[in-house]
Image (cartoon, rainbow, N blue to C red; front, side, top):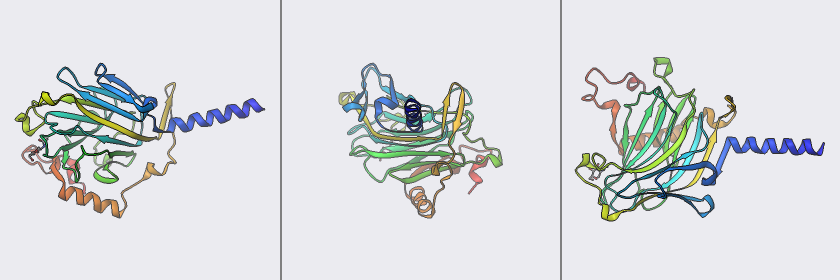
Length: 280
Ligand SMILES: *[C@@H]1O[C@H](CO)[C@@H](O)[C@H](O)[C@H]1NC(C)=O
């Protein structure tokens, strides 16, 4: 009796851990490249990626997520970060993969970063929206979040939604809902294109460049064990939508901070804008 009670307590505890993972970066991520340029410090409270002339570095989540509510605090490369790119994204694998991207393009000292976003569904991207931020993302940590549920993907910064990608399967646009994704991040050099179209090169005298991560928090709806997926659709975020306040903040960002929107780029799509762009 005692041992069976113990067993159910343990089972319950491990289920809770699988569904909601907070905090410890050691438990949630593996450093995947960079040969010592990436480090998890302070007992899993802080993760740093660095980039030098030889290489960048990166990490990925141990877990796969199928729908999720995922927050990470990031502090970007300070000073002259021109040419550097810090990518933070969710992706599944294969030719028809789904992907949800944040990419931070560095700049010369005092000039603003570009926050680049994209959504791939069934291997097709070309859905870029770019933003300025309303603060200096290198001065302190800020929270970058992805809410991904069956109806929508919402990108948020410090709790303010900046982009919403709705489920538009009803008009034939695929939506990510079958392929689990991992979280990836990397810091690398893209001086050929990242800053002002490649006109501003990376200043290697300032290397190593560093981006820092902390306060990871994630809820995962579905857990796969031995090829079998069980989903807990009861979490409130699984059908969360943007309330009126969030809608108006989203509009504030899109009006004042959006610097590129594929949905209005007529030159790029001479045959007509993508179908999803006509959805309000
Ligand atoms: C860097 O700053 C310049 C000047 O403000 C700006 O035009 C550019 O978009 C900024 N961002 C990047 C990634 O180059």
